[in-house]
Image 1 (cartoon, rainbow, N blue to C red):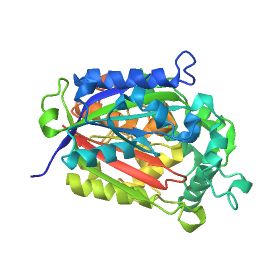
Image 2 (cartoon, one colour):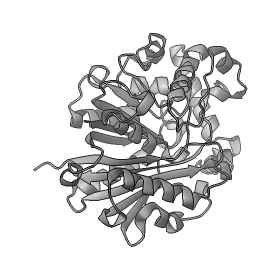
Image 3 (cartoon, rainbow, N blue to C red):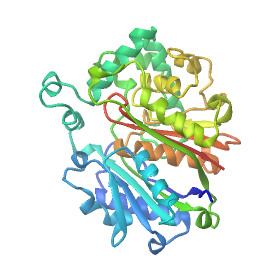
Image 4 (cartoon, rainbow, N blue to C red):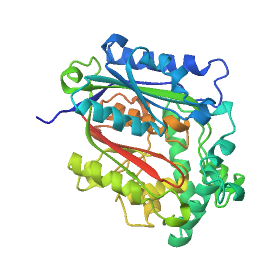
Length: 380
């Protein structure tokens, strides 16, 4: 008999530029406790814990040795992915689908205020060929944005429309880091960081955490606040070396999406999905994600923004929460996307609720230039 897994508990911190009054341990504990409370559960009812964390950002090797306890893993079966939080959902889902576990906590966090993010991400690159030329999170994604815009003629203004949309959406999300509208002119005039990416094309650097409780069908049906069923899930990985891949696309996202679509029986995502929460690494990357997901032809992602298709009242609202362009707790971004998608299909998204949402897509990415991608489809 095919098993089912649902999201039954959801918690996020308020995402902020710097949580000076709260250390990382307290932030993780607060979020984990919140997810358990939301699910109506105690820690003794949790069978397994899956964490998503980044040692370099946490500032210690094997950081989960310290941080597993506040994440609910003391004397529990625990494992971790050194990846975006969406991949932790995939791992927890697989473990529950095996039948060996009935419930799982999934927890992810970042405190970007406590480190030098550019220096940290430079360490992800090859020390002989890539680090000496200054490649890091920003410059690598700028190369990709330049490759994409050059091939398809995408203008700075067309990309800026994504920032304008997402920052406007964040006004309705009380947990968002940046809750101020920006105009097209403000985006275009913001300081240049690495061509063609300007300050407002990029996400902020946020402190924050997110936790979910996943459960097997038997337990999920008893959830006090309802359930968002995981209908489809998929992931994919591209080559590491930037020179070995086509930077103008995101093929591993297409691979991940096609797996999730097949499982969820989605043939026309623009018609069958009600809302999407995408990991907008930059304004350009949200446009690229539209295309990789098959929402439009290559190079035409900007039309979905220009025509209002992805606006809150459009055919497929994208990032009604404000996305990463409004809140960016780095490692936890994908988990936040899953949390927001689940809230939508449970009818619990508050002021940024998409009316009647029954099917939602969440996307997380990690690695340079969209190397790894994970797609989760949830439904009511």
